[in-house]
Image (cartoon, rainbow, N blue to C red; front, side):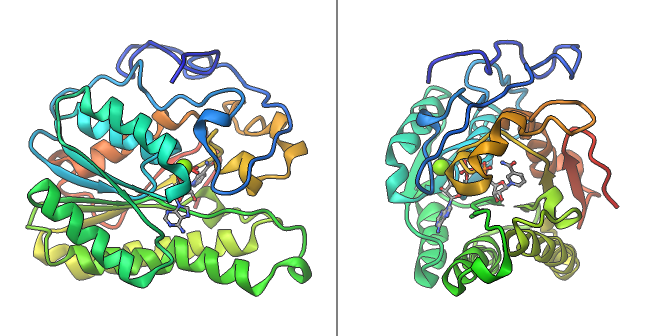
Length: 305
Ligand code: NAD
Ligand code: MG
């Protein structure tokens, strides 16, 4: 992946001004068919290839990251591998090109990297992909439920049953299924991390289906965390704000809204995917042993309850 204006070679541990760590990008109006490819975005997003520096915090761990081919999932997969974990990623078959690029970066760390294409709206795939990840990694102790679908629609009258069902299947129903399948593999000390959104608290009028799945994810995270706490399995969530990923130019936002994407946050710019990675690393690592049922907000300062 080429470095360009939105990538950095300054690692995440260097003292720096968060306002200027990345430029305030103004992506030109653009459109891709879902699910979108990172390689087709203008500008490119920063998944940490040239910057994320590991410190051994996940040495020997075994992680499955859904939607790990691009955006936040790719940044998390790269960070996990650089922290010493073996990593499996899931993605849709249309995203093979992005997945190969992420696997190339994972393999450079010397850790085991496993690519598992498939559709999480398929009930059987949700179970099989977890079993395959555990087989190919030789176990599983981190599950990151991160895959998501976001398609902006201007009114409830124009929101189709098909879209409502696919958004719910992808964002929340799959999360029940992959988490259930993972329970046969996860030993005490394991963690499940779910990607929710600031949309759970501040639903956009264009995203009523998507935003309501994100509220459900928050509730699921808290309920499941209570259910699994005494088994030594911790469940937490990360709630990103506006992050520049393929989700946004592939119908996640109206194309004309893209130049302003993220500008209304207190920090004044969109986030880059690699800025999410440390939150997932913290929740995956044993250092967060007393953090259960929590949501970490990584949103440039947008107020949350
Ligand atoms: P992304 O497009 O890079 O990642 C989403 C991934 O979901 C895709 O790469 C794809 O592999 C996967 N996916 C979608 N539908 C699928 C299906 N039916 N089966 C299997 N996989 C499927 O975008 P992203 O922004 O990095 O999204 C990751 C997560 O972050 C999502 O849950 C999204 O809702 C959440 N999020 C994103 C933002 C943002 O501003 N980008 C903000 C809040 C939350
Ligand atoms: Mg993708």
